[in-house]
Image 1 (cartoon, one colour):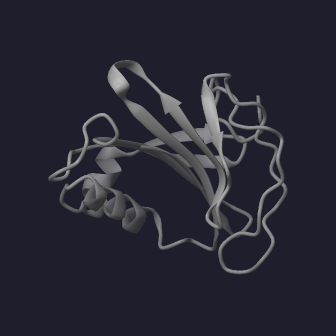
Image 2 (image 1 turned 120 degrees about the vertical axis):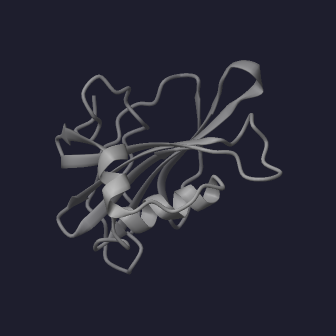
Length: 148
């Protein structure tokens, strides 16, 4: 299991080194292990250190990504509210986020985990409707593990 994954989480990729984090500084090298065979690895992008597509039942598709950004990356609440918007949902307050988020210990530190649901107008229910994300700050960088 890679050092970054929460306990009992499947490994997430093929032992690749991180690309530069957004903001111009080099990202730490991260071993993301080995993905399950049915996860289709997609090429990394300028923002995504790792990216996967997973086919599920009834034509559902999950887009899974690992993003590494410098600094606080806008903070947990602003990122959660951006995802809420992507799902056609209203913004959360700090108090609502505190009730909705879970805290999970990981080798990187305490992660904030959210499970957000909603279907924006005109969205495809097989490809949208839910975001599960974990965020953790480590060494001046913010790690985002996101599944949509």
